[in-house]
Each structure stands twice: as C-alpha cells, then as structure tokens.
Image 1: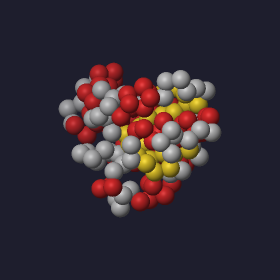
Image 2: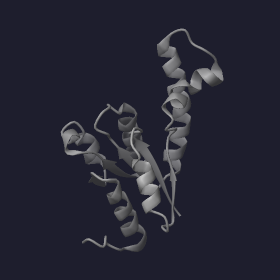
Image 3: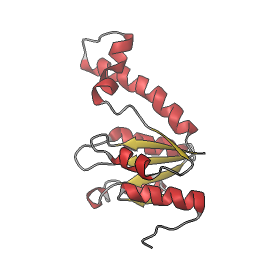
Image 4: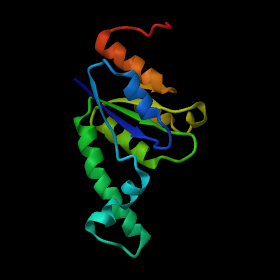
Length: 150
C-alpha cells in the first residue's frame, strides 16, 4: 500500500476530492489536523494556557510538528498544496522537510504562486495545479496507466 501525506491549504475540499477519486487504488492517506481551531489551540488545551500569544502559538506548533514529522516520515509520497488566499508557511516547511527526507514530493498551486514557489517547485518530482492530477499520478505510479483523457 502506498502511503500519501496530504499537506498544505485547509480552506477547500481538495483532500476530499483526492481521497474520493482514489477509491480503488491501493493508497492510504494521512494529513495534518485540518480543524483550524484545534490545530491552533492544541498546545494550550493539553499543556496549559499561555498569556502571551507567541507562546500559545509555539506550543501548538510544536505539538502539530510531532504529528507532521511522524506522518511525513512514514509517507511514500508527500503532496503539498499552496492555496490562493493564505500564505501557507507550514506547507513550505513540510515541502522542505519531505525533500530533506528524500520523499517523493508533489507540489500543487496555481500560476499566481509560480515565481514565489520556484525553489519549492525545483525540489518536487511533479508540479501540478489540480487535485485530479494527484490521482492521475497515483494511478500511473501504481498501475502504469495514463488518464483516460490522454
């Protein structure tokens, strides 16, 4: 079974699109915590309140890193999506971390981010724009089949 970690933008349903379209493939998916409030507040919810927002965020970031590092470490392929609205610095970290571990990296973003992400793109084995392309890549990797529209 191929293990795929879906990282990055959490404000759209791109993960659900991939998981649904990949049914029938021998793939398992993992991802970061996509509930924004839970992700932001996990540190203080578990380790105690912080009066300073910096330390509040620091606790959450470190707990999330435990999950992220473990799941990226277990993954065969890491897909990192950069959305249009927000700066996903965590996604950039995930891409760099996955690359440093020698993971197969797929980067997904629109044309507007092409220049800003040129170094991230250079580390990727594939740079795509649409969730459906992830499924096409997985199908090709697992079955050596091209998309029907080719």
